[in-house]
Amino acid sequence: MVFFYIIGGLCVASSIAKAYFDTKKNVKPEFIAKLLASVSFMFCAVYAIYNNPDAVEYGIFILCALIFGTIGDILLCLDGFFPDNENYYKFFNTVGTATFFIGHLMYMALLFVYAPISRTPFLLLALPIMPLIMLALILTGQISLPRIKSYLMVVYFLVAGGVIIGAVSFVINAHSSPVGWIVLAASILFAFSDCFLGLFHYCPALKISEKVAPYIVMPTYCIAQVLYALSIYYIA
Image (cartoon, rainbow, N blue to C red; front, side, top):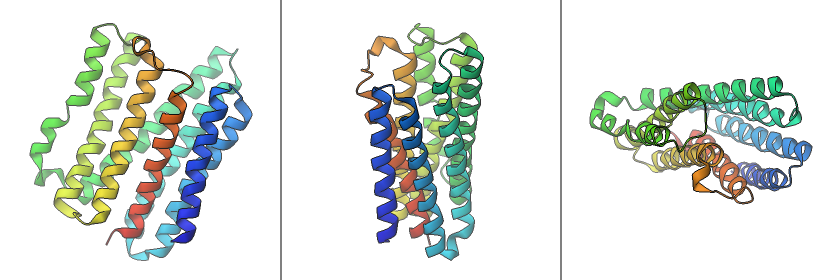
């Protein structure tokens, strides 16, 4: 496990470096730091699968979600290389977000498979909370996005909330051992990072500082991914 913690630490350190270069608007080193962070959490998953071969199916599912996250990371970072080309910027931003969204769907599907929501249907009552908050921000004019993209964000946050509900179900129904709490912590951090990023970019009324936001978004996201990878090692 020492190797896992070293790579996990490298992932978090790279995420902080990415945040630093982001605040300095230094695109190339930011991209390298983000790529290193993403590759690191994928290596964490591979190492965890190697050390827990009984969890190969679960581990591969997690690894696939991490791969989609990495592809999304890369695409979302590439848009910074084309600040004067709106078409390139829109392409990388849109495809990157969509790829990242697929990673969310995979996490939600995995959690619902390993802890069927049919056993805890009452948790679905909480599913509308995050999308309703986003919808309220849209309807009150707090979100600075075109109407269609605004409502797509409602769907995005619906899935993000679904991931948290899946993690709670995971803890209650299937894995009340430490692995359940690891997955729950990862899911909460993952959703928090997404929410904070969305509000930072599209809710100017909150006046979130450009010098502070990157140090919150990227590290919480990377810690979440490392925790998902760590769950592979501990799952029975």
